[in-house]
Length: 365
Ligand code: UT7
Image 1 (cartoon, rainbow, N blue to C red):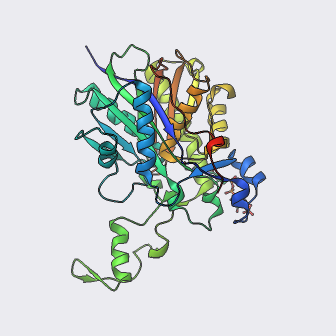
Image 2 (cartoon, protein in one colour):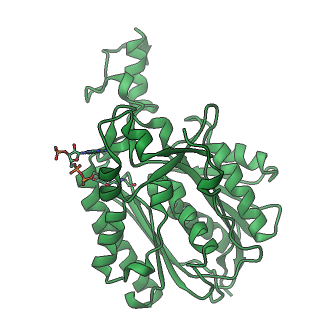
């Protein structure tokens, strides 16, 4: 009898500090109308001083455990590309703070597709009997890696976390994950990147400090001519990413639907990574999905990277837009490039989904 990973809990969290389009327009050459019409975003939440990705992850993880009515999970996977620090991974610390003890805990790095990759990884470990339950958290604090002067990225990204509790169950019960499809194209890795913080720029930093690496005196800057000071910022070639996002997201949804033997019109809710409302609309058009089957919260949270899919899931489920029995496909796209999707029939959750804090709780910056 085969085992499947079944969704049993859902929770999300956004930090209280709110940044509106007008706040950004006061500091950058941009305006509310451009941001709303080009992206669909009205506001985003950002971490405060001293807050990091693990803080967001712990809050979302706690909510997902409570939603499932359990206190523990046997495995923790954190999807993030803004870990608290490059080493060690963020997940073990999150596991400790959630009181999960010495469970296996690791990070998955697939940028905005991270949550789908992490779900697939955890589902595989449950299916093979390595774990009976798993907490999968998508958490990112992109506000900490944005160039304050880059209006193209500053307006898009926000911070947050979302989490799902998985348990072992049967492949034919509601909530069972199925139809996983994953892909990547590393030839396009420069389209979205944060070059610093790794081994390639470690050499440049050593040189800037007048140092040596492996016995060799280094010249300032790496082979690609990056200046070390700017390597910590995210860069993105927006138009090229937009085109790839539409094409790859539509392809991965089709692949998952085929694996599930669901005709595209049988999908009740399409839960896409919230990158840009225009990207979601274009994917919906390609697939012939009516707009009211696309869930969305990008207006309130912006692009929250690995957190985006569980955040919009929690919001949609709490609002009653995602209901038990709905056939749902989750699909992500992001840096790498990476993409992936997975399907499930939405289950009835014991404690209900616990959404992120509403804007009414939030002071503006
Ligand atoms: O999570 C996955 C990764 N990220 C994404 O999926 C994002 C994908 N890309 C996008 O969402 C869009 O490409 C952006 C929102 C980043 C940009 O929108 P766009 O419609 O593709 O605009 P564009 O880059 O073609 O720029 C159009 C104009 C340019 O001015 P000129 O050259 O026409 O004079 C930009 O300089 O808009 C300008 N612009 C802005 N103007 C006001 C770019 N950013 C801004 C801004 N405010 N924030």
